[in-house]
Length: 223
Ligand code: ADP
Ligand code: MG
Image: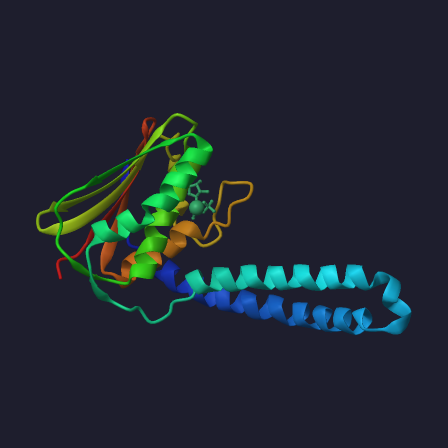
């Protein structure tokens, strides 16, 4: 089961929706924070000051989460520089390894001889991590996740292969739709971000899935 993921309309949606949501949520939050700060400083509210300050702290935390989402979802100007994808993967290794150890899963990294590409390092790290996290979340303990690079017909290909449960056809059709998730605590933004990053790098994403697991292939165009 394999489908091509070139859904440009969805890429732009992510940025627009993210900016819209941030605006709509931040305004009421700013108003609430203002009143809390007022109450926190009031003499006859002094017995509750601790609670008001906690509420302000939590609002700030929520605000930080929104910013975090925005920074990945909103398209910024890409900074393309000559990079070797293998170096980027190697720099992620400690993070990936720590994650695997905590969840009792194995990571294999197979780096082929590949050519340098013009890449936005931050975005490519995000792309790899998002695919990695999905793979990890789909697998039971003891399973393997493999990250590979290779040259195929002169094109650099990155693949992230998991031994998870695979993706149902109905779910497969919706991959990349912002906020589509089958997870209780999912955001449904991970793949939407991956597709938008791939599009900005002139790369395509293909997915191959079955009962033995799922592989995401990111194929970069010749530069
Ligand atoms: P989230 O991980 O927050 O749910 P994503 O956009 O990263 O959002 O993924 C959307 C959905 O795609 C997931 O909820 C899951 O159902 C499915 N999915 C993505 N990657 C995999 C995978 N490697 N194995 C199984 N299902 C996957
Ligand atoms: Mg995800």
